[in-house]
Length: 474
Image (cartoon, rainbow, N blue to C red; front, side, top):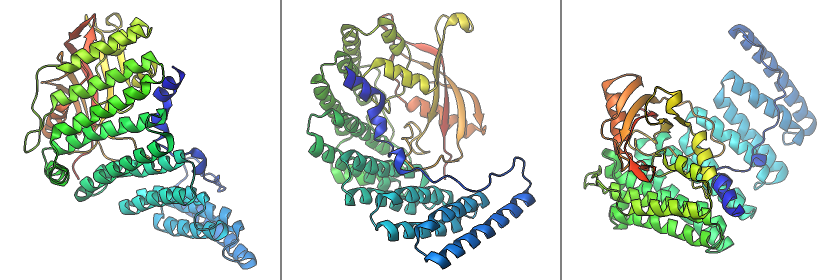
């Protein structure tokens, strides 16, 4: 049970970030800017501080040479000053110099340069140098390989590179989207192979990677069902080359869930076994829902199929595991968009994650007197304009928060007993236009929700609200 709960709460996330110790930056030694500083005062202060730093650096170089460790701190302060001044081209030059300095002192493969490479990633994000960012992540991965670090650190570095490729699908040019996706798929295959070699075929450590592989199979189907040029490119690059039908990808996704089930069976954790049965039902639901048409899009199947029986089995298994009935009722009384991006092996962890994502359920007594609870499903951030029904993957370590423009639409919808909505209502949109409202409604209609079950029956629910965000076309 303990291992399952640890996995449910943390292990998947541990593969999404690199260790904080490797990215800690030196403290800024510059004088903090005053509140409400005028533009003229800011300019004067920056010029004065730049002159002082240039003088300090010149003196150190004169006394100790251009590659002395004492230069690191003033060069860091100069970098911070240039960032404040917005001179990002000069920031890049100074970061290059600092990397040259640390490599000359500690060697070209030192892991201590990772913090500086992380600064370069942040700066190249400001400059929108997407190709350079990919090169930086590739370098971090290479450094961990050269230093033969622990397998977990090597997997973290590979996963950061993988998630960069997934992020580049909405950041980089449209022409490179499919290539980024294929690179991310290949990296995940390699990660799983390395983990199997290190830990064995039945190790608990494989669970988050296996679930990530299942998600990747769904993403293939999302790409090939896109109805714009992305779908055309994806069908040519993936379906034509691999010679597989759409259904095989979702069947393979279920196979990865079966592998997780086999691993969990050895853990002796009946709650974890019930949760994996739930995720199997999710992928059965997706397989039932979305066979693509030849030129993209999906066809709707009006039944839960085998997924309904699998959900019922998962509920029974949770009861047999001794999970509190009220928690099970709460979990299945709220719809979620499938597939869920994170696997949990404990129900309380799954509920806590859902609340963290903004899910709320208001009792009728506290609401407007409706017979059913009032549900708000939080925010849904779409991957990009060509994948409006697919949630944006997590951003990688080192990539700063991106100030990207997003269209924001508040919607109210009714979900039927198979987890579909046919006529969502737009409550507000920003910016507000007929096209943005239509695109949001269409995206919600393409989504598959886990159906709601209350009092032992699958239910139709009304007045569910959600905030839908997506990037405008480039």
